[in-house]
Image 1 (cartoon, rainbow, N blue to C red):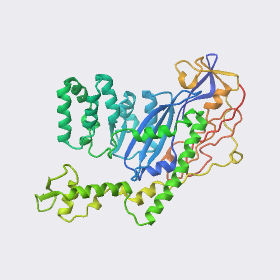
Image 2: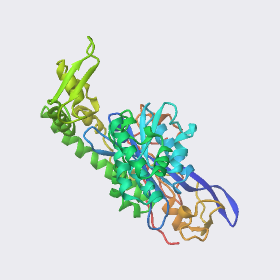
Image 3: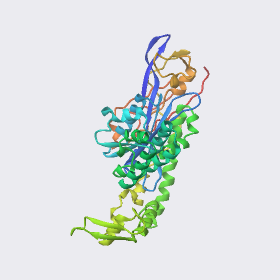
Image 4: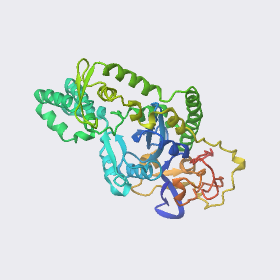
Length: 433
């Protein structure tokens, strides 16, 4: 969590801080990502109602094409600083693995935050790729041509270089200037034929945008209730999905249904191919596509030498791996009467607290008058804590920080709690202004 100083009548109030930014993730989701595809989608969406800010979300996908939210943040807006705060914590606590593919739109703030070496996405190495749909939308705003837009999308989805070159020629013939505009975007960042498989077939940010739609209702809530909602929504998702895949594994099924369906389709196409081997080690082949081009070629090559092509499928598509995604459980939250008594710093108890200059009025000053009442502060202060972590968790290495609560509210200190689930669990107490 990040805070900013509190002011009263232009005077700094020592020992009192105002909520500014918040990042949160749950340990079961952090553990789940290790068994998901090494691909993350991020996006931002507006908060509604009284507190105007931006909710940033990161999602992953398991081998059965289920979408899993893995991290959230509330920031002042889609600024360079806001995205840096989110991506830095996402990289540090949730996705530290090498060769992660980050997919987003082409927002300049996201690109700046990703390229900042202090945010950790350059070492260990990762890739940043763009949503084809957003590129097409930007293209249409520039050139106002829906027919060309369809060709741009087709070029983005090209699975090989000949197809890419075909659509490139088509666009060049219709509007050479539009091709120059597209050439300013590195082709490996948005053309499927050149991504090296890093995108795992995900050409858009539709996965994360589907989660934004799920959170449409909670985005109307106060910040405290919003965080609580993400906890319970994700917490109920894990056991339900886990039980489903436990039943599938018990039935003897090895691979997920999307994987099996795809393989059946490819196998049916490979039967029409003819294969010539070009070396004694069976490493180089020429595949003659006699009926359906560009489909089933690897399977045809494997079949020609009686090689088990199922062994080439990544483990992420095995039911056993999907079940591991949902292994860790979310812990129930105890009744507030069982929480340890908060004994931290007492907050400012005057009637009003002025926002300092150059702070974020959209998040901290919803009325635009530079003043926050005590009731406002109760909405935006966090006065519970992190239900942390097993000792083996990566986050356990982070310094413990007590989250200060307003008035005489009870809260957790992260140094007081040892739990397998991390939760910024927020409780809203209503009082009059």
